[in-house]
Picture 1 (cartoon, one colour):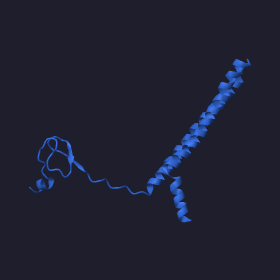
Picture 2 (cartoon, helix red, strand yellow):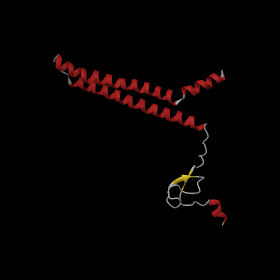
Picture 3 (cartoon, helix red, strand yellow):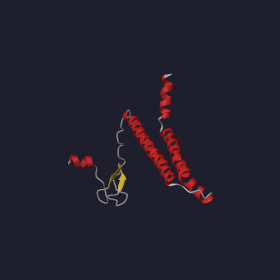
Picture 4 (cartoon, helix red, strand yellow):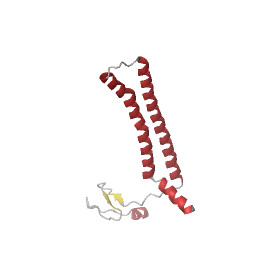
Length: 139
């Protein structure tokens, strides 16, 4: 059972699954903005054009406040999701150890400043003889 929960945790906290969940939630919140835009602005304008029913000033205020509420809800939802994802990412990196940087595979030619293999004794670009640093330190 312990192994099952460990596997589930690894699955649920993978980047792709987390990204998908955030995308679905943001999509649903954005759907509310689009619905509010059509219900509170586009439909009344179409009603005015097609039916000729006048829109009162009080209705315009209600329509605008409904739309602004939907936008504010979206912003709050996006901020909360941002904080949650940031927290989860921080938790995921806490348990991991930093890997040591890999040993360099190239070095600079002191004459032409080209990148050359670390084992090279002669530069393939300018054909200068590259002396070993160990020999220079010993002299």
